[in-house]
Length: 344
Image (cartoon, rainbow, N blue to C red):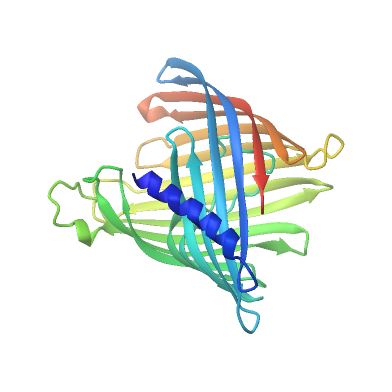
């Protein structure tokens, strides 16, 4: 019933926007439809597992903009994920934007401003790691200074450890700063800092069935830069995340150190917009044990645009080694697909 209501709202927004868009406000739509066949060949716990699967997903965005006085404008944005596997449709992001030529303010449910350079020619077949994205999605106030390429993010919202009604609930507070710009009009550069505080939700404190989500703090910083060589780009990304269990002295703190190196090479001789991406990922997780858990992997992807449709193939391999747990797992993912993007 919930999906039917959301579908009705979704169709009504599209129909109403098309019918009433005029001089007062402008309507933009954008999205993506994508279908992929994926092959998996894993070795987990000494057991070999292999299978393939076909997946289809879509994304749709609706943006209504109105011009205000003194170079100001306001925009309402709703973005939907559509998953064919369970016939679901639900809003992913919903936020209001107020902006002028120097300032952009967004309020509502949205993603953080973290970034990882590289991987320009991947669609969705890859397992390479990300940096600067510890904040994730939530209800935020985000202010972007356009000329300085600087973004401030803060917010507080309730989250859950699972989908069950009795899953532990907690309140999350976020404070983050981001820079994403270009040095000397040539070298892309980004850095971020974020501080996240999680505490048991006051609204769920009286529910006896709830497990307890302890008080935790996360501090993270990242640094990214790109080195253009002719039309190619070599990118370096580094991220450091520290998790502290404030209310539990028995649980050791955790530190994740992540490095991602990417190489993107356009191939205009094949087709304008085509290209090849190669990404190396490395992560070390220290969690109080004698040896850190190590993640290493690489991803290779090729994208070929043809008359509005992206055709792509990719190969991804990663390995997880934990000497303390005698773990040595390998996961291989490869496949091909088609994606059609429209709008922005």
